[in-house]
Length: 346
Length: 262
Image 1 (cartoon, each protein chain N blue to C red):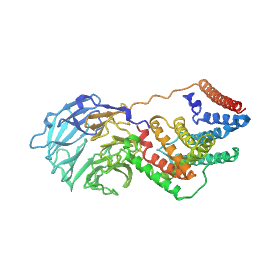
Image 2: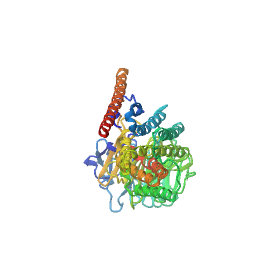
Image 3: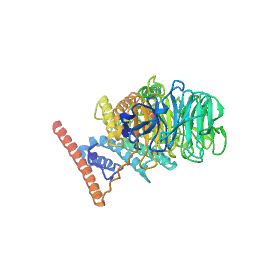
Image 4: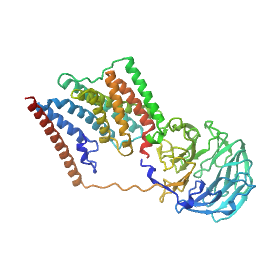
């Protein structure tokens, strides 16, 4: 598995101040740079600021964001929500109680919005007051990666799910997670990955949950590097971000994990923009670090060389000749050494 | 040892490195045929003992398709385990041949069990020391970053356990058993100890390791010295085999995926 090691590049200077990026399937997505939200295209490095998202004293800072196609939503510390369109249009949405921690939005008719805040989980149609689902400390929420799959959310370390056409319910069979868990994602095959801050990654599929991956201590008294994000890509791939070991990649639904680290190993956030594995041109993985974003994109592998039977036969003969010549040479050297020893002893 | 490898194999006409085995088989045969070279037979045969089981192992792994690595179907897992056991059986058979066919005085292979508190203490103590050092080193340096719990559960754990424990014991028979014994017939014990460790490291360059794992070669040589010293000290390869099995399982569980994803 030739993973990502040397394929990470520093993002252009125009994106150096980005501190948060939303995962999305398009070529651009919503991001926060210098405290203001805007549309960010990793391919060009362009960040187009949306001035109306500049925080006011009453709104508090931007704390969360989500994107789905040309639609985006940003949340302020006061609970204020703002709809942001890629054409620059914005609209204020009904606020939620508490400090928003995570958002998920999905275009459609109607578009749906789910917010996990410090007061609980809120869900409803975009533009309408959101209905409280459960009280508690909401930490994560994710939209279904394809139609027919569930919405997922974490409140007080418990998983909640929303199936199409149904109501929110507790996730069947899901274990009690660390209440601070924020890394949650869903693969397009319907399996779910949750990573606790202590380094344990859980994999759930059809109500059956099992430990999937454990991050090890950094070394010495360093402790386990905190897991900061999970980002799914397609049916089987996901990237795991850590504050110390960089990123890790599973290409096979959590069965195996590989180092896929950029130059800076302290990753504060991670997002996939466009399908990274599935289609061409490939999408991007954006890893945010203290020295700016790093970008990763899969590249086509070179085609294997083709050899003619004649050249293969020639190499086989050459290999045999070198092997026999080597053996003959060593035998002669041994024989010469033995002859000299005999001569010395005589 | 590296001589046949200087002629590269870009078209993969010899993926199992049979040329290494053929090379040492030819040299060993020459020492048997030419009377004046008989003194070199043990060393040449010991080098053949290193390469022939290895070629067979690679051939068995590749039989029916590429080796699965960490992503394994049940068939691939079973094939891994079978190849590991076959390597062990071949190494043991060649060690027995080495023991009975080399001229007197017979070399000390140190394969037989010699239960003693010193051997047990060294096996457990050095294994714990190995794990402690490995965990103290920064994870990214040696690729120790996480444990893929899912792929190490159930039948996969048994298959990998059998495959890697077998190959670890086979390597102890080959290097600390046969090779060290052959070298000790011609060199002082400490020279033989260093030489076998260097050959242990060179073998890992010459044979299976490529790319990022090359950085492990100095560690491999150091481990060769430690395991050789433990073997000489206890007059048995068993403590070294125990430590090697622990190291091998640790390597597979926590390092291989990190290194090869780099």
